[in-house]
Length: 169
Image (cartoon, rainbow, N blue to C red; front, side):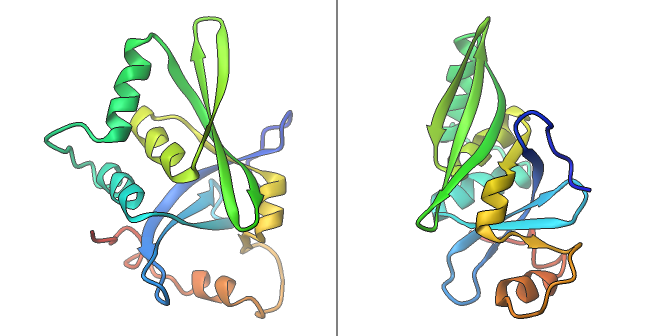
């Protein structure tokens, strides 16, 4: 059973790793649910992949990167990032929201998923994907008994741990 919020159908995910698409050399961030049953690949830009990789590898840059600056600004304004949510998928483009709390005021900020994920890593905020987005994206569900027609599913099933997390810039 996938960890899911009852009120909004949010599936809690974590970043499994980064890799390069073997066909296009475009970076991919791989999200997985907390029970290792559902994987969601999201193709992202090289700079965002670098920002995510630095945090995954616990590397500090000598000067603040954009996501570090955003984290510092949010902190100094007395606010907190509560969560990030991959909230929509339209025309093969994912959309995200960053949920920020400042005192009694809560707000949702529109963001690219890669930026939201990079900020979540810097603020220790949980990452969620809406269940309808997972369904629309045909996320790879390893718990189902589906056929092997989907190349992506086969590809993700064959990824070794060495392939994930060894993303090099």
